[in-house]
Amino acid sequence: MATSISMPSSSFITLTPSNSNSRRHRRTAMASLDQRTYSPGVRISEGNGGLPKVSLSSHHGSEAEIYLFGACVTSWKVSNGKDLLFVRPDAVFDGKKPISGGIPHCFPQFGPGPMQQHGFARNMSWSISDSDNVEGDPVVTLELKDNLYSRSMWDFSFQALYKVSLHSKSISTVLTITNTDKKPFSFSTALHTYFCASVTGASVKGLKGCKMLNKDPDPSNPLEGKEEREVITFPGFVDCIYLDAPKELQLDNGLGDVITIRNTNWSDAVLWNPHLKMESCYRDFVCVENAKIGKVQLEPEQSWVAEQQIAIG
Image (cartoon, rainbow, N blue to C red):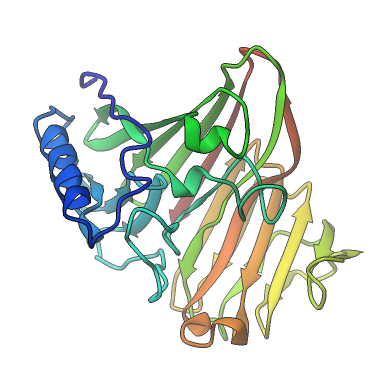
């Protein structure tokens, strides 16, 4: 394994592209990252908006990109060069607003609540904790810890580790949340994955029989029900939570790809497409999300771990 690397998690929270001091801060941080040694297939470069970006390259020809801001995976390509993830055209890379697309984090809150929408993890810069290469496949582990910014919304000490592994036809993640405080805390979380899709042809299998909370037409008062469909499509606005979802779903993206979404310890699933609420791009993606909607309770020094694998073919 490569030497562990640390960078303050708040490095880019207040950066604004128009400020010369902020640009200089980013260049200094990038120079510091560039001097580190990473495992084969793991490279750091300057991405959109000057934000640090981790590029993973497998010897099989697959590639992935992860921004340290939000620990957001923004691209996953298999050897044919086709990107299977979607980043919205209105996505902003300014180190202030969460990146809209790819695989954003929702932590320590899913959806609306007492803090900002979907929590703060997608709106903070993570650090590189470790990198590795296993039989030609690159691995990087990112880390997030509490600071003044997070404590202004959620007054607990924690550590989040996010391990991303790239393989020939899959990308897998392991999220580990550890309570480093002296008091217990609870949280909800999700991986808000955007997949490239043709919305008129996209469909999801594997959710028949699940209890569902349908947020259409009233997101504040979801309708409880049971999913009766073998194949779920996206004919209009879709925002639906599935409780106690299975460990494997299949997404046909309507573009000729069938993607298998596997999980361990993500107990729930979410399907979302904004339809006309996002008229410029809703036709080009669907969200199929692994989630933990019910609260996870952690005592001091306890950890919660969840894994996801997205595979094609």
